[in-house]
Image (cartoon, rainbow, N blue to C red; front, side, top):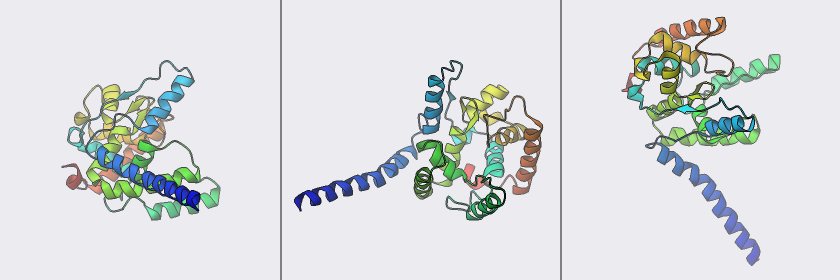
Amino acid sequence: MGIHRTLRRKISIALVFLLLFPCVMLLVLRVVPPPFSAFMAERYIAGMLEEKKGRGMRYQWVPLDSISPHVALAVVAAEDQKFLRHWGFDFQSIRLALEEGADDGQYRGASTITQQVAKNLFLWNGRSLIRKGLEAFLTVWVEVLWPKKRILETYLNIAEFGEGIYGVQAAAKVFFKKQASQLSRREASLLAAVLPNPAKYRVPAPTTYVLKRSLWIQRQMKNLGDAYLRNVTQ
């Protein structure tokens, strides 16, 4: 009996730790910029193992007020137009993605900005049920513990915009030779246009698809209006 009681106690302690550790980390990262994300680390290690000597990592955190409002609006217009209204999950988009996937066998992503922040900060790539479950768990806590401003700020700083290029500041310097605060509406839409697959789509040499998507994003930005994110970005 004593052995079973000790085992149950250890399991209980382990479960409490697993539940509380992400919360503590999120409270810290609410005020402290992350030095890197799990996604950055995974890509960097993969590059070293593949002996891709040219694959470095460009990453520079900047506060949201040092990023052009055009970029924030472009990313929301492209990735998550319900960002200000949901609590981490866009159930309508998830349902539509599942219905479309059932029709053609290709399941499309319906991740919100909050889900992408949770995944990129803490998790690995993949589509396993375990990873998706952890992503959902972390997404809930991100929404509970962080304001929308911090979620958006973090996303803009850790999103990949090209091979080894993370965050808007690094992307602005590499692609446009300027600061993130100086990006124009068109430049912001080009950055947002490659987000679905920055390994395939490139800002310096945009394909017809990227250019068309950029124009679509600019129309969505106009529809949303510049005041849409004002209560978040200011």
